[in-house]
Image (cartoon, rainbow, N blue to C red; front, side):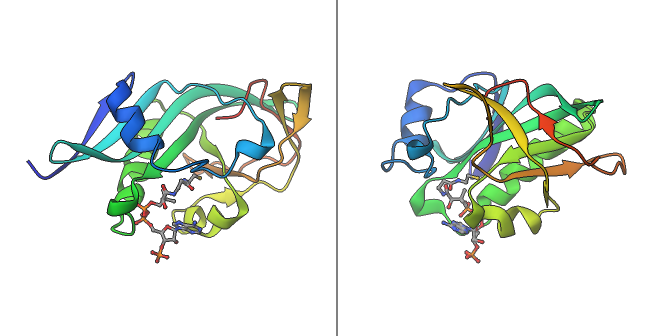
Amino acid sequence: MGIEIREKLLLTDDERRALFEWGPDIFGTTAMRLFWRPKDLHFVMYDDAKPVSHAAILKHPVKVGETEITVGGLGGVVTVPEAQRRGLARQVVKRATSVMEVDWQVDAGLLFCLPRMIHYYQALGWEVVDAPVLIEAEAGKISSPMPVMVLPFKGIRWPSGTIDLGSRPW
Ligand SMILES: CC(C)(COP(=O)(O)OP(=O)(O)OC[C@H]1O[C@@H](n2cnc3c(N)ncnc32)[C@H](O)[C@@H]1OP(=O)(O)O)[C@@H](O)C(=O)NCCC(=O)NCCS
């Protein structure tokens, strides 16, 4: 069987456990007490029968200043420890962004990440947003404590201005 990426609307409990429960706070975001939005479509990479890597996407309109832009949100990027550093996350992220661009035809990708991951996504063409990003949190609307990165499609330039996500982050 080897390596294959499957697209799924929902993860099974077994997939969830294998992908996300291999350590405490694997994304390093627990202390921020944010509420994360479920995604619309999951990409699970299987190595034989075992889920080893994952990314997920959703479609969402955001406001940048007065402009509305439909983005593909990317999140839940993970590779289980024993399969890391083989380029698997890179393959899954590339498949997910290709679905956003080609099938969904959104204007750009948008993701939240810790500062330590910025270089990784820059190498895949993503740009850091140099403006506040307003997100929904427990206390109402707050400025995102995490860096936000975008991947513009169709040759667009990401406009300047505050981003109002109008949503929990993903
Ligand atoms: C980040 C992660 C998804 C990478 O998966 P992967 O399949 O090993 O990724 P790739 O093989 O495509 O790329 C490996 C690169 O990821 C980057 N990377 C991985 N972990 C990193 C970390 N903790 N800090 C900074 N960079 C990291 C490095 O650039 C690494 O390249 P190197 O091996 O030359 O140092 C994986 O380490 C993971 O699941 N980490 C925990 C969850 C997480 O932080 N997810 C990212 C959310 S934005």
